[in-house]
Amino acid sequence: MISFKMPEKIEQSVVIMETIAENMMRPVSRHFDEYEHEIPWDYIEFMHTSQKAMGGGGTLTDSEKKKKEGPSISFQRLAFTSEILSWGDVGMWLCTPGGGLGGAAVNATGTPEQKERFLSNYRGEKPVFDAMALTEPHAGSAMPAEVRTSAVRDGEEWILNGEKIFVTAGNKALVDSDGFVVIWATIDPEAGRAGVRPFVVEAGTPGCSVTKMEHKLGIRSSDTVSILLQDCRIPFDNILGSPEVVKEKTRKGFKGAMATFDATRPLVAASALGIARATLELLKELLQEQGVEIRYGLPRSQMTNIEREIVDMETMLHSTWLLTIKAMWLADERKSNTIEASMCKVKAGDVVVKITQRAVELMGPIGYSREHLLEKWFRDAKINDLYEGTGQINRLIIARRILGYTRHELS
Ligand SMILES: Cc1cc2nc3c(=O)[nH]c(=O)nc-3n(C[C@H](O)[C@H](O)[C@H](O)COP(=O)(O)OP(=O)(O)OC[C@H]3O[C@@H](n4cnc5c(N)ncnc54)[C@H](O)[C@@H]3O)c2cc1C
Image 1 (cartoon, protein in one colour):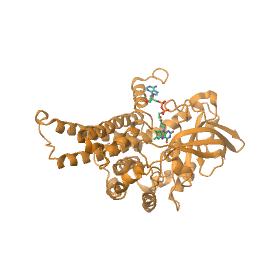
Image 2: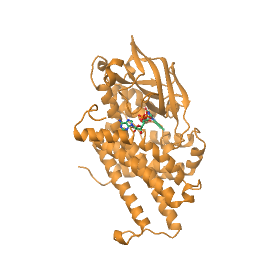
Image 3: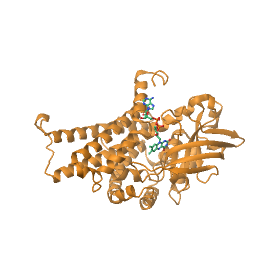
């Protein structure tokens, strides 16, 4: 049964996360926005040490999950973490070591041995990062069908060639730590998305290099890079999933990408809601300083326009959070959550853009000024409607699922 009460085990970590968000992230949030590409090492080291002390990073291997708790709540816990740390600073949250998009891809598509091999690295001496590269210069939304990066088998190795762009945390994974990037490549260019498979490329592998770091509108403390693969040789068993899939002409590659997104889209939604909550709290505080109190409990007709707006924003925020938690609860229950994952991502992308934009408008010059973080949150908001499938693409996924249409029937 889904419960509206926060699981007790999560309650304890929420208090810790709130302390980190308030004391380690907020005070330096402006700094790392202004000094793009400067790495928040204090935060990273702290998170690495405390995750190790608590027995695991963001992404746990299967055996670690079994040891830790009975009924799984790890996806729900991640949603709370994503929301709270994004309330602190979303760019820094994306710099959290041990369990990014690459880890999610390993978890969704790897064998138990591969999960053990690649994810146990998180508990090492130094913080490590991971990333996932699907987008290429010619296509983003059309992925994975349009993957051109190739993987050719050569004995006990794969040779990868191609270019990936806009890879979140790619520099941290490949240059700043001994991490890895999950590269989606085709083993059969004629097969479309059926030929696409995930491959783990570890830091330091010859032929894999970071070629560009983006300068961005928001989430500026998170690095976003281009990666070039030139005759990059990796071990044969770095293909995620059973090597048997190589022989099959199935939709396994596509399913692997979708399983990854089912896990990560609600995390993006939670992150968006963290920014939206931060904005709403500061907006109310600033309004209060100007003598505007929100009188809850009045009939709508007796409220002022600003009161109605704030109450509407809070309703959007809470209802989208419930949808997000439902998507994560389904993931914990090992039930299909594709529709809910896309729905919460769409809603949260809209909600965070609306709330941050309206907050800047309502506060006028104060909202636009760098004196407060409202203008930063406005810039940080939009990415949530772009990566992990744009709002338009997630709407298409929802419609296809509800109406029973294929990709070709509704695109
Ligand atoms: C900061 C940042 C970080 C990123 N991190 C990663 C990452 O870690 N890994 C990764 O692989 N990618 C990453 N991306 C890439 C991101 O996922 C893509 O930008 C996104 O999927 C859109 O693809 P595109 O940019 O090629 O746009 P396009 O696919 O060219 O789309 C352009 C516009 O057309 C719309 N559109 C496209 N097709 C349709 C359709 N059928 N119906 C209606 N509208 C449509 C889109 O919604 C969008 O508004 C990141 C991007 C950014 C900006």
